[in-house]
Length: 211
Image (tube, rainbow, N blue to C red; front, side, top):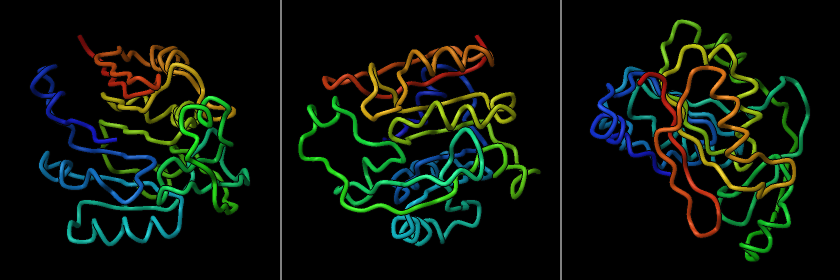
């Protein structure tokens, strides 16, 4: 996932976000793109210990970027098995691989796992970033995006943009579809502004509040 921040400004005519939360950060591949937008704060959230270490190293030069190691979900303190895929952290998830994923991507498999307690996004922000202002939420959580949103009710009242990986059907067992994400975000005044679906029936969606 590489979120084109320019789309907000050039295509929608909206101001660039000044506070960004990226859930499912991996190694921070979007670091330079976020830096170019010159936000006041960026919060990266990544659960895999070895990947988290690389993320911290990558963003360490910019004091406005923060990283925390958590697994975001709809409830806090629920122990889950987090599965690590054979792609250096990519495609890893708290959810089992679904039949559709295995059919479309037979080369992807889980090679390791660890147990971790879940946290809601609201609880993370209340505990450590209560005074920070965020207006963009980015999610790349391999089927768990709806769970992340269900644990972010307070945040969704405040942010203006949500950018999420979405799919036409669940690629992971217990995963969500983009229609489910649409339905939840509509409750908070978000409208779908851009949807790009690839030939494997998944892609990215940008939602925004306002006109």
